[in-house]
Length: 293
Image 1 (cartoon, rainbow, N blue to C red):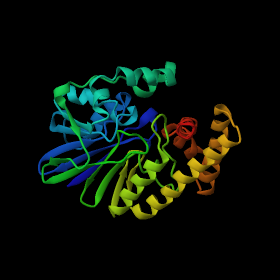
Image 2: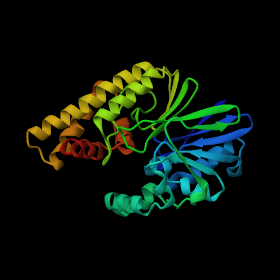
Image 3: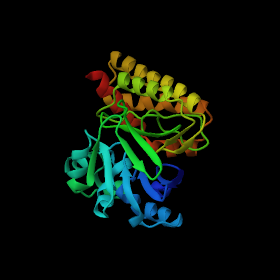
């Protein structure tokens, strides 16, 4: 099995969003589609590897957020089978509610950031439950339920390799700092810790992050991320006990994360990239909503 990482160059910046092309036994599968806005870059990346869109018959998305599955409907329209968590399938078939919610958040920047999300024909969508397998040539890929970031989240494992979606955080290339993915509305600190434990028990030698790329120090990464998720959750819980409102919390949470990033040696320019990949204001909202519930 060969794994090709394709940089989608989100907003013209390298190293923010990846898709992964799996090649095995003469078959191809794509893990993550990225948003509609980067579809052209994804297609170019596949062609640069010597393949065409028509060669990709299977598409696996870890969850249905726009940066991971925004182009899934387009791939379904090309005849690919799209595999997705049972809780997310209806949003690929009818993405109208998903897009309406995103429009409320991003407003005039919606098209620039995310592009179009086309509906996927029902017959092209395969619902996956925990433990279901997808065969790609000689490789068997297993979907595993991993809530915490979202209730509709799978990681995909194949032997000692795992595609972690958003449940192992955002770690940009060459950096030690891991940004906690706590976007609203489904962040769950307890479920998150259980999913991290599950990944640790897998003893994977390689992990692929959608944000961004291959991780080889998997054991160290996951243990540090476990600590980071708890620290982020505890920080927000304490601020809420102090009576901090939502707007002030966003500012305080950004400062909290910036301090950790800079202590880990993240340059100011790279911090800007982290903010584009995983905005702290959005993450603060997700943590706040979790604790308010």
